[in-house]
Amino acid sequence: RRAEYAAIRNQPADTKDGRHVTLMVNAGLAEDAAMLEAAGADGIGLFRTEFQFLVAATLPGRESQLRLYKQVLDAAGDKPVVFRTVDIGGDKALPYLSDERDESENPAMGWRALRLSLERKALMKAQARALIDAAAGKVLRVMFPMVSEPWEYEEARALFEEQIEWARAAKRAMPSRVEFGAMLEVPSLAEMLDQLLPRVDFLSIGTNDLTQFLFAADRADPRLAERYDWLSPAILRFLRRVVVQAREAGVPVRVCGEMAGRPLEALALIGIGIDNFSITPAAVGPVKAMVRSIDAAAVTAKVEALLAKPPPKLRKSLGDWAKRQGF
Ligand code: PEP
Ligand code: MG
Image (cartoon, rainbow, N blue to C red; front, side):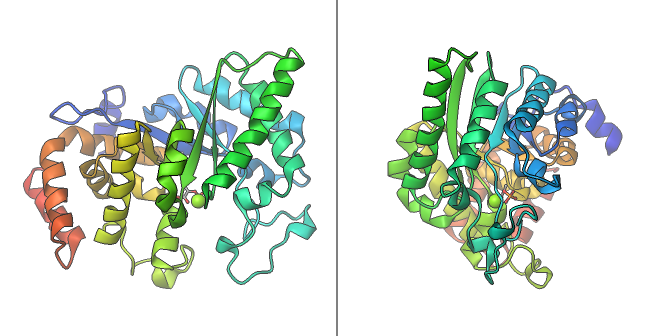
């Protein structure tokens, strides 16, 4: 299969009936960006900036952040990179910020990500400055993790816009354009899309956290790993509603959780209208092979039918059908 994936590395991820699917990768290290070509990917759809913080012995300063972001943008060349502001706190506590250690029993639902950033504004300002400087002459794409309500997005975006104004006034070299997006990984945000969508350039669905919050099932608990299925009608119906609303608002949607890196799951996502995935580099070959082997119209009709009247085991029904189609 490896040879098969290598053979299609430079081929487009187009379905048989001509629907183009954008395949980007999730990354967190400078080295990951260098792998874009080898993976045959279209860019970095999720750059997890907290990796640098998690491996450092002391809080990374603005200069070392700037160096990393520049390296990543340089390695990506013309391909887009979406930087996610730090998703630290909760269980990803930092040893050098001892007061940030979270003793709560449910750290995933605790003081993490944007919740922490909005209270530690100096941290976020430093990151904003580093990102703005790193993207001089290029498009800067930023997204915020764990947005639960639109005001959090607004506050984070306003902080970035202040820094952009500051940099402009200081006559620094500026990004050619700045795009802002929100991660949809807390279910409450889905109820507020009418408020959020007019304000974002893109939406990125984090199915890892979204699934654990939808099912109230810890993503790190191995005893639950098999119990709740990404190919459940609850998840797919939820995602489809988001996709329909975003499409009506003209906002592009990407899925950046692990779900999209599995071929059958990605097939189902195509069936509900998603055509942009950010996945682990090793999944690009298998997912591209799937995309090139399917008819998107037939997949859409099948998934629609399965969601209208869900069978007891949706995964099996979809899998059997896909096999009969030659996938
Ligand atoms: C997610 O939650 O799906 C996601 C992509 O972010 P992370 O896995 O880093 O929480
Ligand atoms: Mg997440």
